[in-house]
Image 1 (cartoon, rainbow, N blue to C red):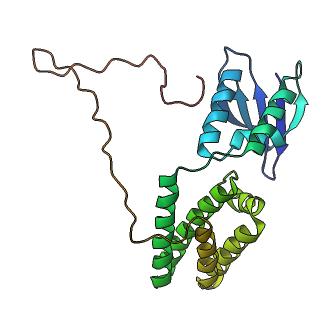
Image 2 (tube, rainbow, N blue to C red):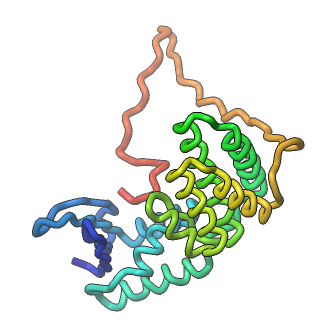
Image 3 (cartoon, rainbow, N blue to C red):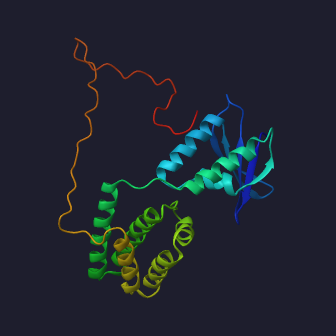
Length: 242
């Protein structure tokens, strides 16, 4: 196998590796010696596209996997160079959110905090609390120019980005889940939105722009719509090389 890096977790082993150009970038799950193994195999071009996509998403998944993984075997120092490139990208951090996106998130968080204060139903309160947590986290990540996370990586990335505000937000969310009390979560979220300009209600404007209409399909003289041309197997919107 060409250069690769790996990282063990409790339930499975994660292995990144490069394949020769002309192969395919893919993710594959298998079982080896009673243990799940997830393979992330990339061509040079495919890995570059994944790095770019993860930078846009502000999650840096591949960057973290390569920068924090262990080099098991390499050829001509290729894995070490990729590892260093990934580490440099992580230090640079993600780009800032667009101003309009920040404004929208401030508005969403303000509205969710109002809903949280009014929620009586337990399930509704928990659902709204999740919106408060995720939106406040996004704003805090942007404030700190820190990489985001999802699932079990959300609290980890929050504590890395800002132990004080991130920790207070997580503690408030935990208390709400345990006893239904929303005050600590709301207080922590209010402190975070204050870092980004404060709550936003009146004065918020969002302009809707219609998507471009699809290209007209050709209609022959007989009135029957011509069939769409068959795909050549390409994927114009795919982020990975196939």
